[in-house]
Image (cartoon, rainbow, N blue to C red; front, side):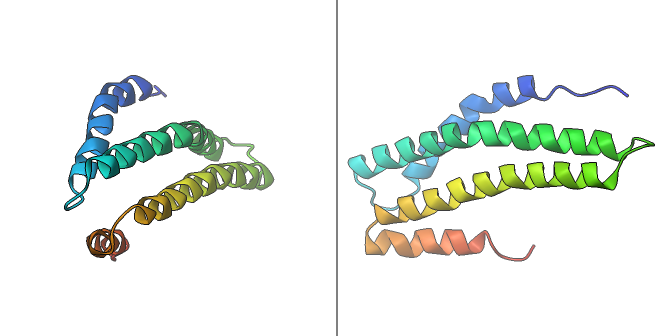
Length: 126
């Protein structure tokens, strides 16, 4: 089975990801220059902080899928790999939600209303 190497694809998208963080800062209504700079800095820090965990997540998922199609796989090994995968996901979520709280802390009350609506909108059932 041929394996797809997605790292070059992801690296090619990196500039767009970095631009989107700046665009997100621009989407805060009436944001001061200092707020926009802080938002951009927070987004870049989040991206950097999550990178290792996202790599670990992708690696664990790939290994889990490969294990699943083996004839002699042990359920205990699959469960251990799932634990590894979920540990990475847990760290990603902790960083993400810590970031959301940090972002909200620099917003004015008026800005928080729109920000909160956006956060809650992401949790809508699709």
